[in-house]
Image (cartoon, helix red, strand yellow):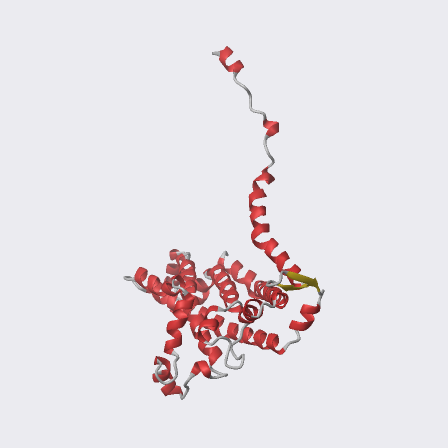
Length: 302
């Protein structure tokens, strides 16, 4: 037996790859899927590229000087900011209320969770077609009901109502995801803490504010960032419902990017808008994390 053990080869420990080598596939995918495309967009923003002729000429910062001061870009930037303000607060508030309602029911919670998640699973472009029919002037359901009460009609052809109509669809689509996130946060609330607060005489509002809401901190931060990102890059419902009109009143940055880069083949100008949209998303995310993100996350893990 001893002679058998002496003949077995010993492992060569010195030939093992370093642990950092395990990160090579992840770094490769990160470069190919994120860093590489960004570098390509940065390069294209510096050239006047004609995809039909295959010709490209270096123009430096001329594309930035041409696109950024334009009225179309300023209008799209303002519309994107207004759309974000119209959708994100409403989505978070309504989704939290619905999640609290589903969490409190004894029977049928799974059914309601599935019903509210359906807009996320559905194709937004197809759903936007249905919403466009609802907003049709006079014959649409919106004009026949809410329009009669508020005295508002023909939303999609109004310069003041087109963007709110699009924001209704965006809020409806994002609520399913937000509700699921809030339900996941509510499931993490310790039952014994809630029971202790109830025994101490805390009312429903005090239990929510001092127990439930702090526990929802991480879920709220994540949902806020995702909903804000979705709002800043909105495109599908704008393309289907209004096509940026009337008179650019619902043109967003993503729609302007498609219009310049795809429709008019302005590759350099579209690349500039892409970089500005990326910078806007990153900037808003950093501001949100700095302002409320870390505080809400600490509240949820205390």
